[in-house]
Structures are given as structure tokens and as C-alpha cells.
Amino acid sequence: MSMLVWVMMGIALWHFTIFLPDRFWGGIVGAFLAAIAGSVLFCLIIHGFSIPGRHDTNISDALEAIPGALIGLAASYFYGDRVEPERPAL
Image (cartoon, rainbow, N blue to C red; front, side, top):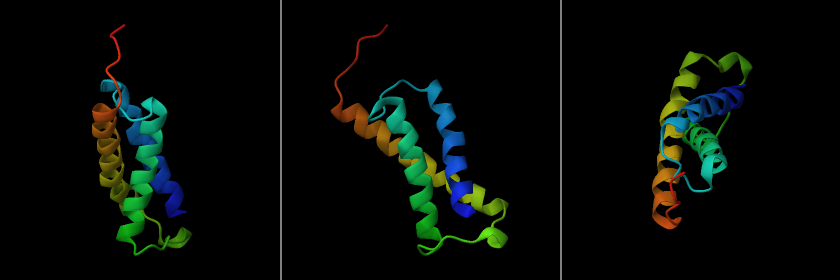
């Protein structure tokens, strides 16, 4: 159940990427995958690579996913800004 919470928090934070220039590695889909992967990986590290069950899930699991999603989005943004060519403005 915690995995679902982590993924949903990553998706929720991904929605705010519309306010940033599209420099993510892989575009908006790359940002989507980076937010999910970042939140899940960060929370797995926090919990010692185990997934808490349904009865062990609480609001703190959702809050723990926020830094991971932001780290994943930042990594995708800075890597994409560095390696992808500049796109013309529309």
C-alpha cells in the first residue's frame, strides 16, 4: 500500500512541472518517470528496501515521498538542460 502512496505523491508533484520550462530529459514523459522513480527509490532507501504493508501506511509515508520526487525532477531537469539541444521558442 505504501508503494501506491509513493507513486501517487510523485505523480501529484509532477503536475507542477507545467510551470517550468520544458528542459527535462525526455520531455514531460521523462519528468513523469523521474518523479515516480525518485519518490519510490528515496522511500525504499528510507525504509531499508522494504515496502510497508497496508496497516503500516500512514500520512508520513506520503510526506516522505516529496523529497524523492523533487530530487528526481531536479536531476532530470539539470541533465536534460545539459545534454539536449536548445529548442526554438514557439
